[in-house]
Image (cartoon, rainbow, N blue to C red):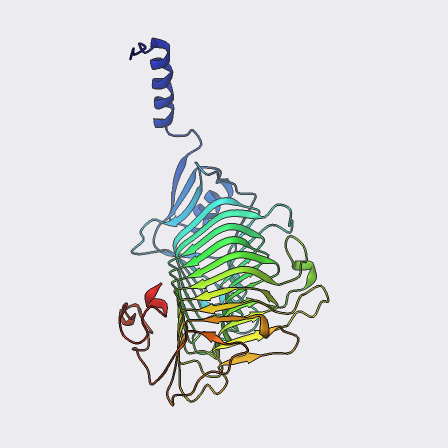
Length: 395
């Protein structure tokens, strides 16, 4: 085989491309701030490729920015400069300033990382589409944030997201809130993973994660929910029709996956509410105080189909005598369309759950086959014992 000699102009072209790739973008900028004024100035001036690094310390809330757009190659990063000593944004409920820490509208390719948000009576953080359903915010990442003491009563959320697509919320801590720790309205194609949600005394805490208003394709994965109120995950909800994004369909939420999570305490763990499906698998439920699961129809608009077709499989459920009804079914729903497969059901007195359809290949037991998983240290490991590959440890 003859080898054609490499042309000099081809070599020159390749070297030109390589040198271009190695040259930092002219738009990239790192800005270090250590005061309220400097932080506000940096946020106002940020553009594609900007990194804002916030020094340890205490900062005021009421930060806002709209039309902030990075790109896939040049995202915008707003982060604590020292992850071991993150800056605190403190609201007026904790002696600081503002009802919301940061409000971002109509943004893309923006990351928030390594900060503490504390004591905001409105919402901890707000991210939305600026009121235009046709142009959602997108490619938003929220990483290693602690959001605490939001509210404390009423519809005040730790993180409120309306009209946000392609997002990730990872390794965050939410403690004490009024409405939802995270409230999704018309959000799509996102993940919540490896987060911790803790209820706190004096906070109303309706739910930890609420997915409603036409939300679709959202995953809640490998997170811990401890004493988080009425419903740990509200898979659906009841949304005013004007707030659906992009438009009113036939359900509040569709294509939602809840997997690898641990639910400890709370009134109920998972509620399907005017939902289209929803795959709940490989989770562990321990110590709920009234119900484990609920199937409800709260949006009564005639366009909404009855809540239908949820799938509950490979879960481990452990209850005591506080739970007399394992699954609460409300009127106007389609419980006969739900499916149950390979779940392990343990009760302190050996009771078995009453379900609307037959659980295929279940395990039934008495007592508690694991330590109550209230911390990472107590997370059960995979086992060849009676619970086998059912529960969060097997995800």
